Image 1 (cartoon, rainbow, N blue to C red):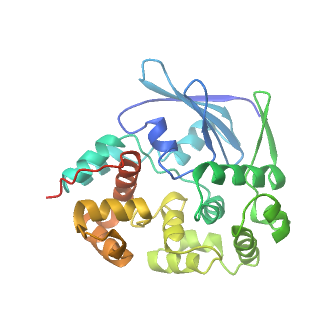
Image 2 (image 1 turned 90 degrees about the vertical axis):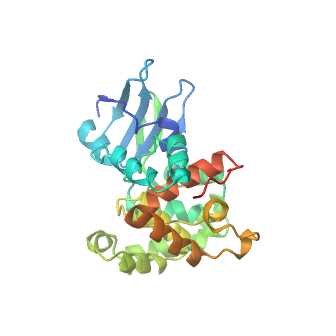
Length: 298
């Protein structure tokens, strides 16, 4: 494949750090020059910005036209300025968090890869998650050469089904090895049909199907719903950071551990509606990067 280049005007809704470091993806790595290189599908793309910060440059090898590939993956046809304006009107907390993470865009990541990636993410840290995913890809994916370096596609369900539990254990998955193995078998045997998940319009039905997969609990299911090509913006993943920020800003329980997920979900849907997942991402990113949040709740 020949190298392709595509450029867009930067605008206010595309910041490299905000997109790649907000917790939604694991196969993008920052380079010495400040750009990021990532693998998705059969594509290896370097994303950078011009020195004057006016343009974003996508450069790499693609299975299709780079403009089409990047427009779909980076959700470039969606107006994030309208979304931010809508959320900013809710209260000062949302306005502040959006100002901090103004360049976030939710990527359209492959559903299968997102499922396995977030199963691996359970009780794990980002460097370790990235390492495991890279080892799985190198062992079972397809090799791609770009700029004299080797990259690997994320393995398909068929490719990953060649791995036994002990094989996955050797790659450092820990207790997640059985879960990845069992989920792979479920998808291979169509106990959960990924194509049908894309067709299903009912959010609850899709979520319940995901919850039948081994290693997929409520938080992982909501991450899959939000960050994959399922693109369900009403999904509201709740982890320790989200519980903390929702409690500090809105619930105000002196004992954070007594704040349950149903209470948070109810509040989230009342405040943020069908774009609760986007609100979550701004709040999560802001809280995680700024551990002391001053409550400005109205």
